[in-house]
Length: 118
Length: 201
Image (tube, rainbow over all chains, first blue to last red; front, side, top):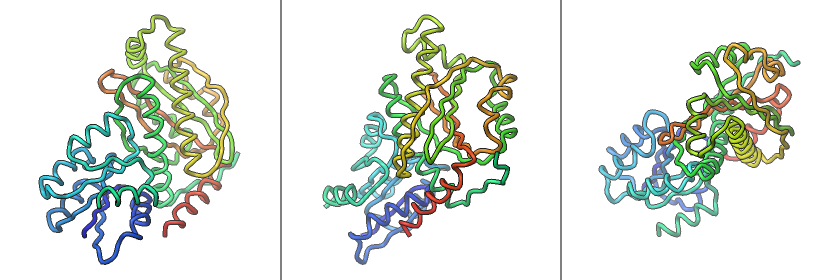
C-alpha cells in the first residue's frame, strides 16, 4: 500500500504519520507540503491513499483533489481539515473525497478511518 | 516592559500556525453558523513585530475608517485579540442580519468579536493544554490615523502577531483579526510549542 500525506504543516504531517504508524508494515509513505507537490508524486507513484489538507499555499486541497482523482481514479482521498463547515464537507465529498476528518488527527480517528477504508 | 528580542524558530512557527489553523477552523464554523453563511479560510500568518511595525502594517489595510474592537485574555497564555472590520463590511453585515441602526451594528460586531476571540483562543488553549479567562470586549470606531494613540498598542513593545482573515465572499463581509501575545507569555509559549513537537518525534 502507498500513502501520501499532504499538508503544509510539519506538525500536522508528523501527527498524522504517528497515528498511521500502527497500521503500516511494508507500506510506502510519501509526504507533500502542497497540492502541486502531491500531484508530482501522484504522477510517478501509484498512491492508494491520500491524506489531504485543504488550506495550503501554492495549490489548496480543493484544487488538488480532482487532479489527484484524474491521475488515479481508484485513489482514496481522506480530507483532513480544520474547516469543519458543512459546506466545506459537502464540497470535498462531491469532488470525490471518501471522508472529511476534523483536525487534529489522533489514534482514535485514524482507527475509524482504517476501519472505513478496510 | 521586556525589551529582549523575541525569536521563534521555523518549527515553533509551524506548530503555532497549525494550532492556530485548527482554532481558526473551529471559530469560523461557529461564526458561519451564527451568520448562516459560508466562510473561506486562509492560512494564518505568524509574525514577530515591534509595535511600531505593527502600526505601519495597519496602513496596508487601506481604509480610512474601521470598526475596531479588542478583547483581552488572561492565563499562562495571555494577550489581546484585535478585530478590524471596515465600514463596507460592517454595512453588509448589518444588511445580512437586517439591522437598522448603529447601535445594533456595534452590538453585532461586539458579539462577533466576543465569539471569534473566545472560540479562537479557547480552542488554541485546549490544544496547548492550558486555560484562559476573558475580559469584556471594547469597541471603538476609529480612523487609521488614531490607531497609534489607542491604549491597546501601548501595552506591548514587540508582539507575536497571529494574523487571520475571516471572509464571507457571498455576503461581502471580511475582517482581520490580530492576536497579540504579551511579552511575558512568549517564553511559556515557546516551551509549550517545543514540547508538542518533541512528543511527535
